[in-house]
Length: 365
Image (cartoon, rainbow, N blue to C red):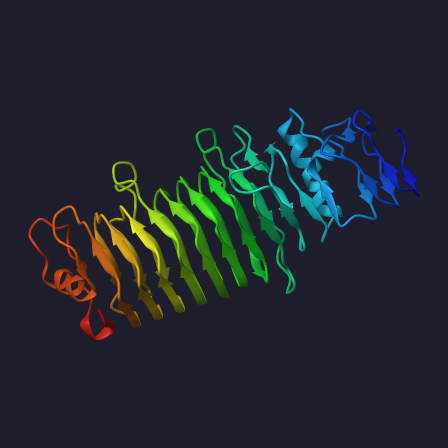
């Protein structure tokens, strides 16, 4: 197809048939497409990807548009899909190497085939950029990212996060994601009334999930582990509930750089509950700044290489209850009450104690 073309038809496209699109050509199909998991459209030029609009679909398949050996071309094709298919579910079956950041628009809707299955994205060697950046947010900015794999390729890249926002996301869904090997963070986003369900983030050099600003976030489950400095940072946030997560540090690899599995900074009205902290250290949960009304409860701290939690003096109305520490390398098991006593007076052979002012913590072991 050498020039702009509009087709008013329903198309049944068999395997092997291919629309070859010249540079910059716009193809508009005012109808639906019936095709399987194979390529249907081919873009001849890497630098000039023309718009391709299909009017009658609620779902499109990534494989229709091809996966190319040129990662920059893949990024341009994906950007075209994002720009022209707001609200349409785009289903991914391949892990696509990307050579540039793709900007997600409001109502972007991506779905793969499960975090351990097919469908996702990988930063190509030497890109040193974020994988996805969210367009500056409006009051109604919302997206869905589900059942996808994200690879930052940090062995070949010195910068870049998985998903980064310039403003707040509203009523958005991140579920069934697996983000690994980013040079910076897996996710660095402002949230407002959003959810993270079964989101795994591993082996990121600066941290797993960085939540900066906003209000209203529910985090359910997820394996967030072996991120170099933090697993979660929650900063300047109001109203969060993090439950059922598995958090781990590899003490032989990361402990020299690690700060805390969960770092809560100047945040309010939050809870950390029913989580499993494995090989944590030097801190499991740290509250600092002027954080208030934080509940740390019913967590299991296993094989400690530090202190389960610390609360800075300026933090008030912080409660720690029904937590348990098991199988410490240098001592016996104990619960909240003894955590306080050990932190206050220190014990021979332990790491330096963290002091918790008694007036700021309620212990209900």
